[in-house]
Length: 258
Image (tube, rainbow, N blue to C red; front, side, top):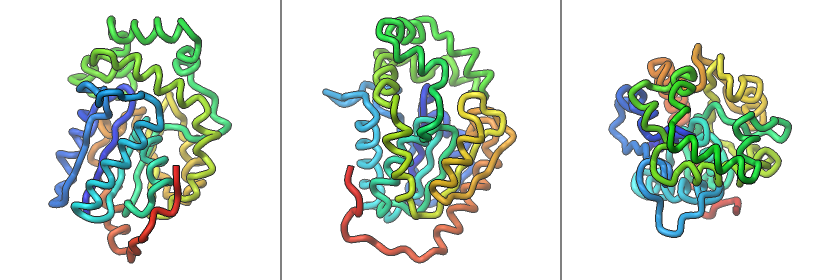
């Protein structure tokens, strides 16, 4: 069964390199860069959360057509996109594994997110992140791979402003998307860095409870795919084995709309 990996902000698909090197599957495995993060986005791209969800669903549809129901994995913004895609199109999926991003109506925006909401100040901050790359040291402290820290999603031309637009579109993401998490009925697992300073484990536990998912922590900061790839792959393989033993009923029509 195929697998789709979705990275978050400000990572690129390079986040998954340690995991991909260890999963050893014969099925199709896809770990694309989010639009705009390492190459120009499609012409006319509108960098809001709905666009990224639509893009992810298109990836799932292609994988499903070629190989059947998909194992979906997401981290950070990839977690948000994966959960929203799963809540809208569960018939495309065999399992979901996500971590370290909030869909919770009571979670306050983190400091950087709050600053991005301020007109003018947000634009200046985005341009600073693009030009001087002050995120480098922060990413290293959060567990980001040193070789990828200098070439993160803020550094691709124009993408810092796209990331700004994405975050501004999601200021109410908890209120808009949390209730629909209950639509996810495939085997699911939330994997969280125990020491995450960006989105604490308490948020992950509450989200997992909404889905009825297994919740597992790793001795890691925010970027567990890089920090603990062996442990992460062991968890993914356990989830996939359980999901593949479960009878799968193909739905003739998507049960939910956008």
